[in-house]
Length: 113
Image (cartoon, rainbow, N blue to C red):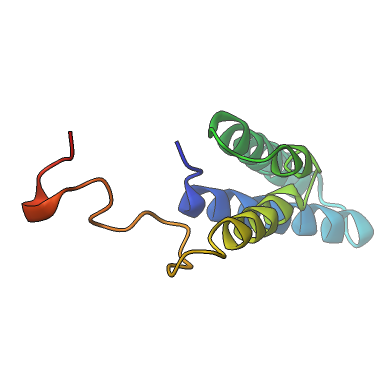
């Protein structure tokens, strides 16, 4: 199973964005209500990034490790995933990490085997 890139992108954006809101709030007005609302959102996004990367099979160890970095782990994992796929696909004519629409199908759209 490949990593769901859309879900990982969303979780990474929420993780980084909520951390930015928490830091700005902490350094400026420090509203407890904003911290109470944003903290759980950040924690959930952080756990979602980790879960998406760890539960997907075939991800390199470096991707799994950088996903554990709080705040920016999602973006680091995405960056390493793209780099890994670019290197893995360097010998092929396709440079897209997603499978081709007809991959696994024989002639006429029938499954092989």
